[in-house]
Length: 281
Ligand code: HEM
Image (cartoon, rainbow, N blue to C red; front, side, top):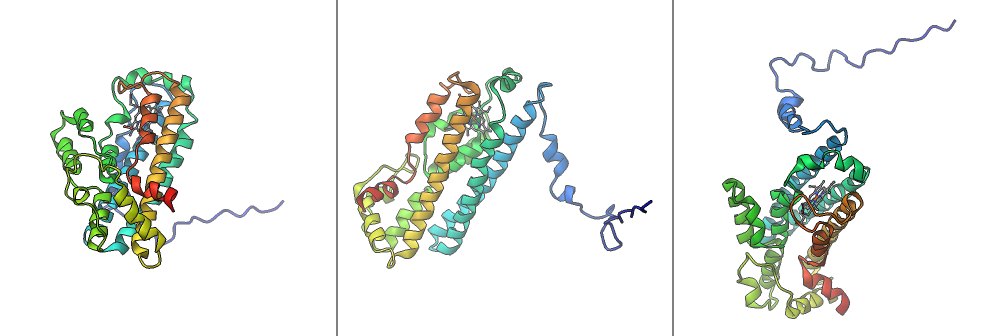
């Protein structure tokens, strides 16, 4: 009879196990608080994935907010290296956000209906972090503040982002500082409105793209912005298609037409000249 060897414990003398007077992993991360936010309203098993996927996406949105703010600051102060680094991180986070839809697409229409009524009027449309990220990227719309009127703290934060120059406004200021004739009305404008396509700005990008070796940092920055917008649209598309497979063409809990409303966002551009320049090259 072969003698089975009992596996030794992996906990040796050097591992910290006496933690009564020390900060632990859970304390540093406030894990009890974080996990206590998981509070299903029904007994439906499928409400768990719905809550987790929203929490996960909100956490990534928080990081996007920090990283895009850092990129904006770098561009504003002519520190392009940290700005490009932050935008590279933004891209990786966006990949996580896009692939999160694969997990949620295991939710069938019947699964969703098992808890949908408990959601009442709540909807991702009211995600203030998502709206802030959209504002940072330039999708300005004062009406998007309306669902937040009842919460002064969030309203203030969103209003500040609405009134501040977006990342593209700062990029255009940078391009002007580099000696390009950016039209004055694109630089000094009402930042609560989205940037409007201007063929003169497209032509500036055309010069930069045609002589990319000479203006490499601006060219690289422009391509990073295109990456960010591309992935943002992928997120919107995957959200719209996941919603279609779960609720079809029913109205949303937020009160919109549902899929039709989500589709309309796919026609909008953050950086219109950077997309137009491709046709002209
Ligand atoms: C079963 C899953 C989901 C369904 C059926 C759904 C449905 C919808 C619908 C119909 C809208 C339009 C507004 C409305 O009338 O409610 C919407 C908006 C939105 N949802 Fe979802 N959603 C789901 C999951 C998610 C998740 C996981 C997130 C992640 C945070 C999310 C974030 C958003 C955001 C940010 C908007 C606003 C989009 C915009 O303004 O363009 N949704 N959702």
